[in-house]
Length: 353
Ligand code: ZN
Image (cartoon, rainbow, N blue to C red; front, side):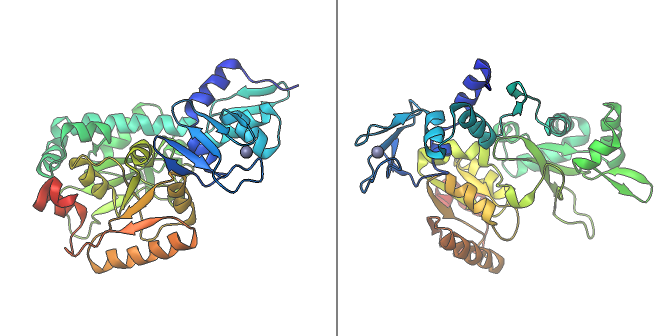
């Protein structure tokens, strides 16, 4: 007989949002603070199943089936209770492993990578406020990115090439793990840090684990790209990532909308206007995985790409994908030929809204 520790069970129940989990199985419809769905446990034609977000429980008013997130998964998957707990744990990325003794919490295999990333994020935050980061901090202030946004988005500054590498080596990280996280790369003269003299914006997965960076140039250099992003690593899978998803999802559910913009800087532009439900698909076209993540929010998507040709093309591509996957969306008719950040700079909060 397998068993799960009480503390794990409690932690999983706390971290798993019943709306999030149930939306993987059913189409949920928002009704005030709560949700409704067609009950899968009897021959239902009206949405008789109600989900309480406060209590994190569900109940069908016709057949009486009800319970918490675990009971739901147990019933719908027709599996045992411990299996349902394990399934929910897997869905939210909670490290629970089945062993011969039953279910046991084990350290997440990716935890060492997240630790390196968190460490490096803290370092770039420190550098932003040091003398070397002054030009970068001034850039932030010039772009109206205030201290609050800098803190919440953990914005930092990657200093000169050798400096980052020395710091990471001083922390005793192996070259292997630094290569695996994409923080260093192999050059002609050995290893060098991937990011240098750039504004650093961390990218997280949907559970809030740090997996990569988008890095913006501060001082214009001939031929240097404006942005560089982490390329494919053990923890960074571009096609699975929606920038700011972990922070935006609660706001999106409250506001009944999620605003999709092109880049991280556009998400930050929305933040300047106190709009917290912005996300970005980091790349030219949205993937099926990204569309599915957006679908899980169970809210309408407001597409607000740049007003230029590339933005219009991207809007068309997104719309096509969204239609194919049954994702509800509206398109902001942006006639300005500008991106959300430029609109905010010129017209302020009201203009952007
Ligand atoms: Zn029912």
